[in-house]
Image (tube, rainbow, N blue to C red):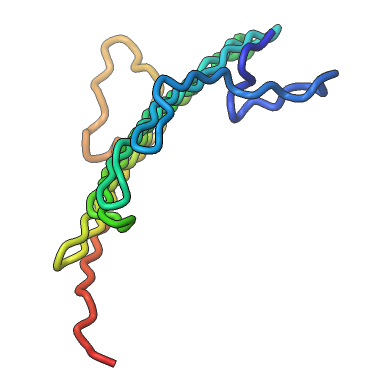
Length: 173
């Protein structure tokens, strides 16, 4: 049973009909503003799946702001498995050129072992363009046995950060 399709990571068996499109609602649909929400919900013999995506755009040719939020969850009963993914972001553009943007993504997957991961990026363009990406991935973990001590924080997470600084070209040609 599905309304609006299936989780992106789920491969349904062959269906006697095309895979359904997301259930969508456009709250605003104008040249200068758009707000749209898409969703799905599915139940199979062994899974429950739910997800949504909201997008918004406000602006004109000279200046625009746009953003989104998305959520996808898949629960499998046997063997038990869960994955939840969330992402969000927004950007500001002037004359179609990105001036500032922020993007965040996170995921939880498990169990036995559980995995958690995510990333964040920010970029801006001015006299100096900056792109920064930070991501993390927690080493798989299992529930602790009663009376055991937690792992050392330095050993359970790997965090990477990458920043790029680009100076605009000043050569004339």
